[in-house]
Image (cartoon, rainbow, N blue to C red; front, side, top):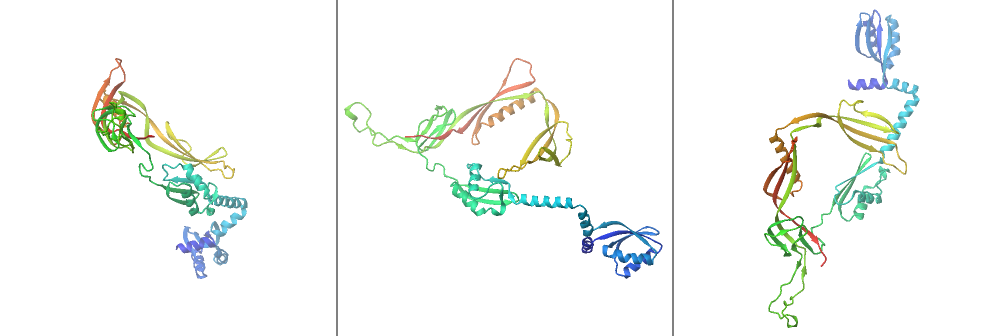
Length: 413
């Protein structure tokens, strides 16, 4: 059935309203002469609606005369009628052809280049290396040799271990994998210094010479483990010139990269507030999206509502513009805007609830400063009294944590 309807559309078919007294004879004669009628629907006692192929219309005229019937064409469908309509609208067909041609030409170029996987290498460096291999915005896709681009990136950037170039549509994606350099490789001597003040609780020296002891209070930048290992002094050696001075060392100092772990007690302070009456606006969760095309200052809505259905809303806008090619800029922009509904809210809290909220805010501020490996040893909360009637509760939180405070700092012997 599908094949029959497809062939009927290709060769064209019409809908006829047949009017007469001998409709059954009209249908039987058409069938006997090989003219296929389908979707036969009786409208009234002397009218019937049928469909027939375009090639069967002319023979039906003879059958209509013999049966004293008349028919009228109500609709025409199929390729022949479509071509006939196109002949009457040549400019429309020409415009559609030009549009498709321009669209095909634009889709044959690489307009966007995306870089993934780069962490230490700047995106500009990757794009510059890719340009040496022939990949740049505005280049024709079939002129890009992806293998050559990959070789150019690896040659220009020695820290790249692997790279892959993929082109899909008008976007090229460059994936890079950076080499992982071992810590301390090709590095000179270094001290292990304190990155923050604290009270030394435990010290473990793996390489170097301890400069502090357990129980010492250290300041930021103070040497914890020295990368300069002083030689031992032999007390049996005579002092120089026979004077009462310390004997000379047996060898010169040795310089290394200090390694180890110095755990210290570190104190943090955080401030937080909790309002007893809080009013404002917050997202409701509802959102609408609008996609617009800007052509030479004129805006055309491609998707989304014409009017925003929210009284108050927040906007998140993303603008995509065509890159310039050979000093030719295309004045076309795609604006993708998300409108987030904002609703007013009013929340009342007791003083105890406001106190808990203030404590949570103060702890959140401290957690932003705490490293992942730190262990909280003690926590103390103080309420701040201003002596005035206020709508909020103020607190200050003190946290004592145990953490490794050592950080490497190179030095010149």
